Length: 248
View: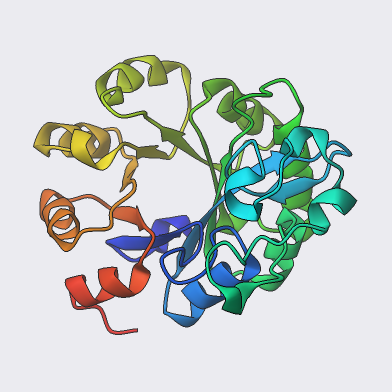
């Protein structure tokens, strides 16, 4: 599937997060309904070792409650409203597990799972995610990404065939390309303002994909496509399709 993905690939960042609460089943289902062929989500471990889908280490921003994801059980996380912060229409949306997302989103959709254990890097998240990929038979339709190289090295060790995306922080694209010589990866994910002609050419010379984050303005979408980026992450896939003239 990875070799045959459309170009440019529009990746719904945390689902269709401009139109629905981020990292919820509602946002993922809406992205698919809007025509997205790829979605991105954030994975963490709960206190009782379930892989849950939420971006922040704290539940405060998206649920209005206090607590760290790593210190809360799945049952406790299930009690939180992860949709009301966005719009009353979505009140009652829950923090999903990665297994639920895999079960809900069909295998025709590429799922970029960002390994976001940045405050708990030794928690075993990678092992649990790999176990789920095996259990749900999703190796052909998953791209694992992270800012932590050790996460990606571990993933490649556990599952050599899994696709790997290396994230670069703002203003760190070039240093990341230097350190990436230690890593066998499939895609490079730089910040939108770091992308220029040289970067696109270099990544493509290495036979890798270039997926850019997070792109929400038509001007940036057009510029990146003109430069030759293979795709980009966006909160608003509808805007992206309209800007690029893609029929969904």
